[in-house]
Amino acid sequence: MSIRKPRSVALWAGVVFFSLTLAACGGSSSSSSTGSTGSTGQTGTPASTDCTQPTGSDSQGCTYVNLTDAPGDFLSYTVQVTALTLTRSDGTVVNILPAATTVDFAQYTDLNEFLTLAAMPLGAYSKGSITLDYTNADIEADDAGGNAVKLAPVDANGNPITTLTLAIQLDSSGNLVLVPGVPKLFQVDFDLAASNSVDLSNDTVTVQPFLSASVDPNLDNQTAVRGPLSSVDTANGDFTLGLRPFYATTGSYGPLRVFVGSSTVYNINQTAYSGSAGLAALAAAGATTAVVAQGSYDFSTHQFDATEVDAGSSVPGGTLDAAEGVVLSRSGDSLVLRGSTLYRAGQTASFADTVSVTLGSGTKVHEAGSPSGSFDISDISVGQRLLVFGTLTDTNPSALALDASSGYARLDYTRFDGTVVTAPASGSMTVDVQFIEGRPVSLFNFAGTGATAADPSNYVVSFASTPSGINVNDPVRVWGFVTPFGSAPPDFTGTSVADYASARSLMSVTYASPGSTDAFSSLSSSGGLVLNLSATPTPAPYVEQGGIVTTLTGAPVITGSVGVYAIVQNGTVTLHITLAGFLSDLTTRLGAGGAVRAVFARGGYAGGSETLTAGSMAVILQ
Image (tube, rainbow, N blue to C red; front, side, top):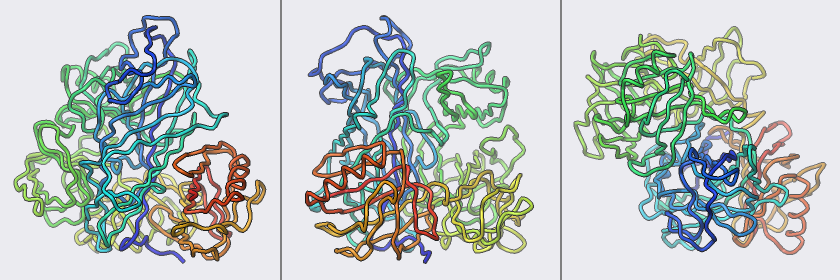
């Protein structure tokens, strides 16, 4: 049975990853012993943020720290990251983060962002840690009516949480080994699904932290970098910025060289460019200009390649106020944004669920990824994700209003979740939409979207080429842009689509305390983990596929081969990179009296057999 995810009592969030890209290079030959204190205040050797000034011979590596957030249920999950360390096998602890940084994990669905760059000693790193400060956390989720509810973080006993340090021990065969000339990607997964449960009856979120990690995983998402411009080299086709992540307004997080090409798209001071003309405009903007670039890190060349660059007044936090969210409704030149991040002029940012926006003939419009400037306010329609700049005219939190009649708006890539009504054919398919940008479709008012208002239960999506392998009733996630206001159908132009039968599905089975001693019917490398839904206490089993939830009723199976498989018990995380090793360890622990509190697995899901092929999995034991 397919249902909408329950939001009235308990919510489970998505997954957040900290990815550390480690590329060995020349660096400082000096080192400190453990016991010194880094800038984060945590014991250990502080890493240098400058990887560009080698003073020794192959003694250090260059560390790129990256953040991403898989889809989850939080509207805002803003906490402060105060420390990030790696520990070498000889006990040397290296502090990677140069300063405390505020991060809203909910902002990074389908996107990575570089957090910092650092030079660190070569060697094998067997564990790491991250410290999170919840003192001024802004954690919000929507209730059954789609309204934002602010949540208080508490521990398992209901006590307020302030600071948490999360630690991880790597599989002995999966240690991070940093050697000269060999780039490595170390991805530490702060799993929100396994770390947080929401109780909307008490407006609390219970935080029981869990980490896992892997070496050299694939980076599937776009990566972003941001910070003030340092220099531009038009001859070589690159520029350098001083990395300054997320909401940071000060601090040195390292210099990053960004490479561009003839197809790179720019939006600089609200004007669109492409290729060499864009790089020249960036150079003319001058040093210290705010820059946000999106692209990917190329491990073969050890460089960041940008596909899109925003700069100057096209970046939030400058001389204009800005709001970013999804268009809930539009009437004439007035629209309502929901699930918004509000950026005040001068670099402050906060979550503001609803903002009213006024457009006008003076509003400049640009579409993300497009070098064309031929867009206008008619391109802004219901369901579109939008970043809009202007002047905040009403600062009342319950009636926020932004005048963008002489401002600027950017159409961002928009995602929605639903099930296929008619399979793709001739470049088109129809979808029953349930969530747009994570918000229930029932919140949206589609009046005016076309001569006949768009019907979310029969939402028409066009594609440049017909997607393959997608069938009727498949849960899908679609990315792209909403059709201009008043001109539907089609209702949406898709740029990509994900079928959850092949990836991204989350299987979740939870048990009340003290956990279950008969959670599995069988465990074997050939047959995987067969779940016993008649276990005691009664489990809460479901599969989530982009907001579409299916209750499990039979004998669900989790299989796999090689991936990231973790067991959490007594505050210790043990990682395995093979399913066989994971199952052997799990069998031993269950035989010694371990009780299962939760099982989380991600991968492709076959609904007919209730089988999930997991690339990652966590079993939490009590």
